[in-house]
Structures are given as structure tokens and as C-alpha cells.
Length: 318
Image 1 (spheres, helix red, strand yellow):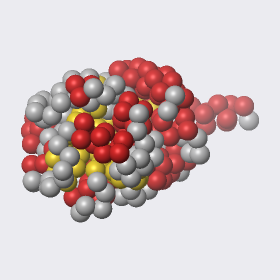
Image 2 (cartoon, rainbow, N blue to C red; image 1 turned 180 degrees about the vertical axis):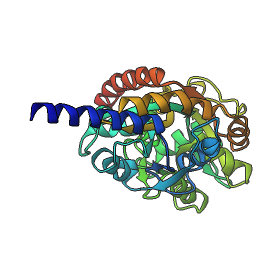
Image 3 (cartoon, helix red, strand yellow; image 1 turned 30 degrees about the horizontal axis):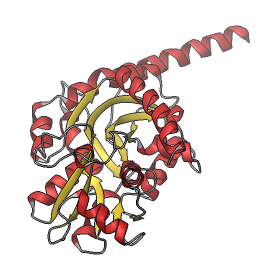
């Protein structure tokens, strides 16, 4: 009996090794926990373009959207229901899922997932409609002080990068504004500004870049330490006297569920950054105003750990 069990164990180990060696042998899914058309969805579709090439993953990657509750719906599903076999990947957003896990009420934390690689770093920006009377953050702050709680502005959800930037702006300016999280992520938040449903909004630089190019909005400030190459004419919040750092910068990348075989993690960690480096990806990201910030698995692990500590301190004081 012992010999039979030993033989079975060896057989299963060999099968697992073969499966990992042959990975992937069918198309792969990438879960995006925001709706179609938003920055995460838009960029995920770009960075996975070369996946099917023989010198890349060798199989195409298809996007599936599971939006809702600022990303909670998708990440709850990914942490509790997605198969840990390498065929269902997830797009992560930092600080979003870490901040949400710190505040509680979700089924995940940073320890629920294994990062593969990071593709971008997208700062938050404050936007207003093209015909708005606001032309600077000073105008926004002045209105907020004169009308406490009446300056309505949209964002992609609670305790996402948009919300963290909003909380920092309020604290730095000493004002109270009315942050309105939207159900459809960044795309819905942007539509609310363009339609005039709110007086302003906090959104991703990449979404805002495209909307400004279309002549639909004005961008008043960037929540980062330096001006961005895509918006060299837009000053940072700090330049405008607001003590807002880069804690809300939206890092985006690919992860897998905890429990995914290490051989598959190693395979993906070796291939995915090369996919992000592809010439066509760089061209499409630049054309869309989407900043690339490629990081390896080890670099992402360090970034996740650092952001966990930063966000625990930041959210305790907001």
C-alpha cells in the first residue's frame, strides 16, 4: 500500500511538472475589476496585445470585466473563486486593494495574491468641465471654503487612489467637499464631470489626458511629487500650496491568486515584463497618455510591502 501511495505521489508530481512545463497550452483570462473604457481596462487591453506571439506568452490573453464597489467585487471574486492554475490572471491597482483591505469589509489583503509584474504608474489629477469657472486649485479651495460640503466631485470608488487624493486635498486645504464615488469606475466618474453632474472630479491622469485632448475637461492639478511628462503645463498640488504627496498614484500590473504553482509564477514573472516592453505596447500607451512604469516581480513585492506601511499610517490620520 505504501509503495502504491508513493508511486501515485510521484506520478502526480510528474504530471504537475509536465503541466507547468507546457504552460500555457490554452488562452489565458485577465480579470479587470473595473468597467470597460476606464484606464485600467484600456491599458490592460494594450499591454496584453503581444501575449499570443511565440516570443511572448505564446497564447492570447482575453479581458473579463468584473466591476463594482471600487474594485471590491472583482478582487473578492479573484481571491475566493478564481482557479489558481495560471489561466485566470488579475489586474491589480495599488493603493486601491491594499487600502480597501486596511479599511476592512473585503475578503482579500495583499497576502491573498502573488504579483507578477507592474506595467504603469498613473497619478491622480483634479479635473473640471471645460466651461468651469475654476482654473486652479486655489479657485477650488476658495469655493469650498465659502460653501462647506457643497463642492461635489466624482471619483472611481471608496478608498481607491481617487478617494485617497480627495482626502489628502481636503486635509491639506482644511476644507470639506462632497466626494461622490461612482459605480462604473473612472469612466463613469469622468462622464459625471463632462455632463456637469458634479462640479469637479479626481481621476486618472491617463483618462484625463484623453478627455482633455477631446476638449471635454480642464486639468487643474496633479497629485504627485513632480509634474508629469504627459501634462507638463499642469502644476502639482504641492506647487499650488497643498501638501499632497504621491500616495494616491495608481500602480497597475498583473497578479495571480495565492496558491498558484511556483513554476507558473516564475514562468509569468520572466515573460510578462518583456510583454510590457514590446514596441507596440509602448507606442499605444504613449498615444493614450498612459505612463509606463515597468517593474519585476521582486520590485513589485517590495512596492506592495512599502505601500502597505504607508497606507496604514496615512489612513489612520485621515
